[in-house]
Length: 135
Picture: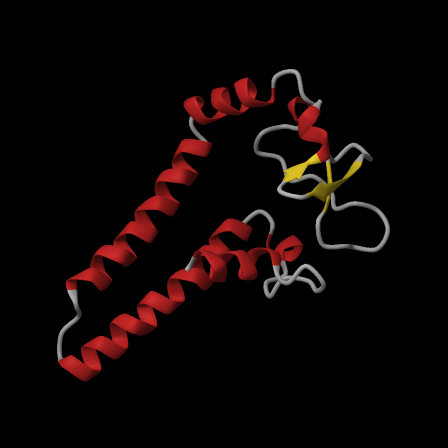
């Protein structure tokens, strides 16, 4: 499931993602959520048709996905989430970016792994960290 989420969100490193993330702003996270939760809903429907009832694990798994998405969204927009962002980015270039802002994509050709800080700076992924997180 995590691999499917990653491919839907980021795509293959050599190609764009399956979802047009820049076109989904500001609802991109809900677009990814809909694409991910679609599979358990299909499985629930198939389970109901084949067996006449849905296995409890399907309900628990789907409910967990839904509750996680809702709780993360609520926390990110709460005072606690905004304070956590401020504390986490203090002293780094990310502190200049508004916590709930959607920065403009980088200028030039769009290349997987490139990110912009919304102020003209473009950064490239290096391994599993982003260069500008180091300060």
